[in-house]
Image 1 (cartoon, each protein chain N blue to C red):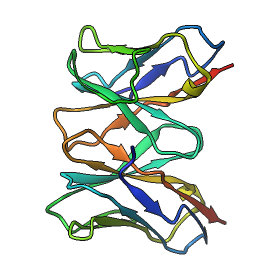
Image 2 (image 1 turned 180 degrees about the vertical axis):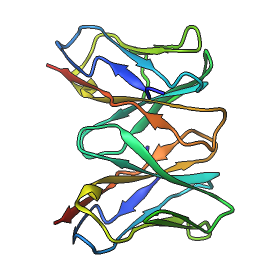
Image 3 (image 1 turned 180 degrees about the horizontal axis):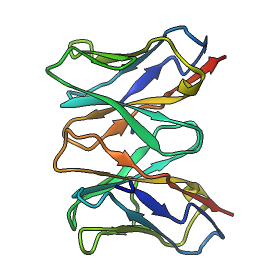
Image 4 (image 1 turned 30 degrees about the vertical axis):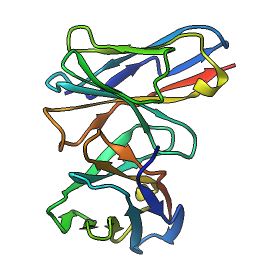
Length: 114
Length: 109
């Protein structure tokens, strides 16, 4: 069990560019979550998948954000036309089965938009 | 929006003392979870308490839940310098986890 991994760990991009992050969950976990965390705040839920189905999206997830989990394994989060307000830590987590289980978090991808 | 509110926002104690953090929430929940986050890193799950439970222990951790007051507390006994971190409560109800803003705990050796 290698835990949840995220790539890249850090990303610096210029405003207006597109960025894509990858998350590899724990292999037997069928739920995968994306969160965003800004300095001094707790993580804010963005979206989650059960297998390949995207079941819920937060209002925070504007049209510029899209997430996929094509084969029910790894997931990608893409941000188009990045804005400075997108600068944050993007966290991925996975869990086994349905709600009521602890979530295992990855180390996060820190995005800086200049 | 964030449902949980931790109190205090920051706490500084001496090694060996106990640390108590509180969490209040707004809507009905299925369970409440506590997570720890070391500086700049991902979160680590500490303990989960279900809505029909009132108290739970895990090692040096003790969690209580009062659903009538919509509040929870996390007690860390005999604190160590390694306990220095941010602690978040997170509630799970009809939506996935909703986190509070956290309590920053500093344990001074």
